[in-house]
Length: 355
Image (cartoon, rainbow, N blue to C red):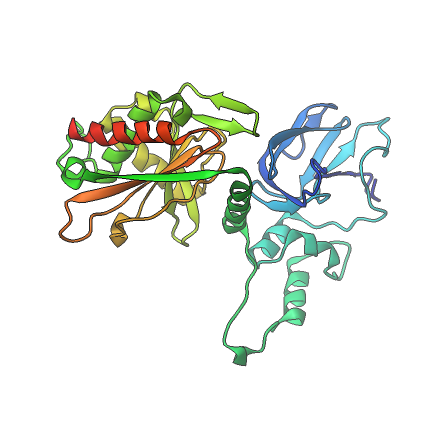
């Protein structure tokens, strides 16, 4: 318990060797009164996603992190005012605590300073203020002489979360990759969508993927560790896209198999606009990811599968003079074997010929 009578909530050690975790969701607002056992926040580690509970009665005073942050194990994540009668036993605490307001944390994050460093930055009062951050940066810079000809910056925000997810996927997923060629004119022929806009080849492709996946249960399923498979009733399609700063984001169209092509086109456009504005939408029930670099004319690629999705498909753009486009499928071999992947991809290719 600190000198303000507050108790820290720290990220627990959830497995041997774990060093950091990603904050998925904050479930309470500052000012909320809570009882012991109430859900407080959700974190994702290399091995699992888990909802953590409040260990004692009290009121949430402030969050020290934001959703999407990747933090070290034992990092202080929240400050709680304990209810009368609650002791300081059972929750890690520090003998003294200096206030670091949320605006200072945000100011530091914008300047690439890791939240773990804030406690070591000197301040002129019992609060760490933005001017203290400026003074710290002035003392530390330049880290590298200008004559060297390069600059360094902290990896923050969505980029850091992506690195965490990629590293987690590299640990968990056993990837397999196969490909098929389809006539481009099957995708690029005019597709009527009623009163809505004309469907692009990629939207025709995405809609077909959702329809076919509904008939292949493993393509609407995800792995839970190595010993459980969760099969969802609907197909949630994630579309890989770049935000204006080149940060990767996933726009998710939920229950896509139930949509007409017109509905799918509208949903794609709406979700991509939201992702550009608000960031990544991927969740644990996003089973299939789609990638296409049509504006760059890329004909072929091996897409990287990011867990918990069980598959990712890349749609290539035909090279000049070529009639066919390549569809490349990367799948999680723990869940989908080669024969099942082949059946899925073969049925997908055949579906375009019937359109």
